[in-house]
Length: 245
Image 1 (cartoon, helix red, strand yellow):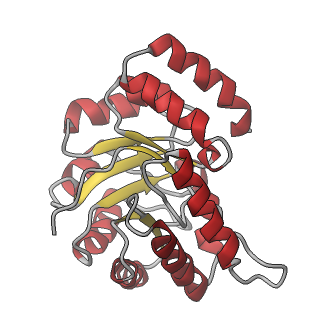
Image 2 (tube, rainbow, N blue to C red):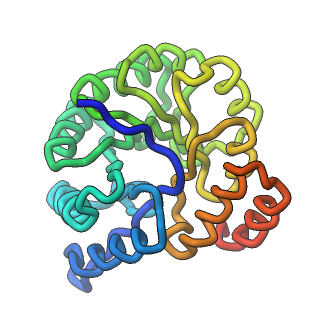
Image 3 (tube, helix red, strand yellow):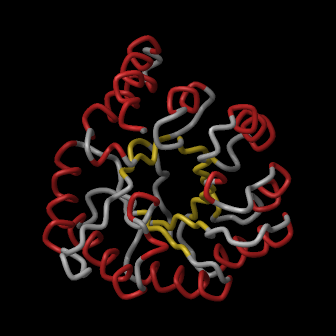
């Protein structure tokens, strides 16, 4: 199946729960409708803002189902896959793709420190379990591992690993990724700290928690950068920075 390239603003959706811990399906569907109405370019349920590591599998499954149904093909849905074990992540990725998503966002929660070979084999297995595009996600502030540039170079050989969201905030590393890998893996920005820089070096979008709250402002920042209106984009990033805290 041929997939359209992902770009633009992809809000990390919150996962609304009822008082007894069940998914509030109507609130989630309303959030999807609201964000699409505001003009977002895609939706990412079960990202960091969605607290995926703390949800049981049935809640995660239903979250994806409700999001896909509410989006109804109007924008791509790239759903988070999060499991500490490789077999568990492979199973979750395949099940998630079967629910009708357009792509998956693959993250491995940290516990023990891992080397490049372990990281590569985990994400390679996940990518080979699905046919849809895969976005790799790393957030080393909360993990005991990170992608090295060498690991990313090897993972980029997988045909459906096409994107990276790097939340390290390490601008030197981001430059190394861009200069080493070129277009083999396209970059999505960190939530709030470096979107302007990522756009400046060729990033294609912004997977953003704050976009759930300020979608229009997030879209305006992306569009200003896309049109090389850098002063306007810088002013917009400064305005949204307080939401990072």
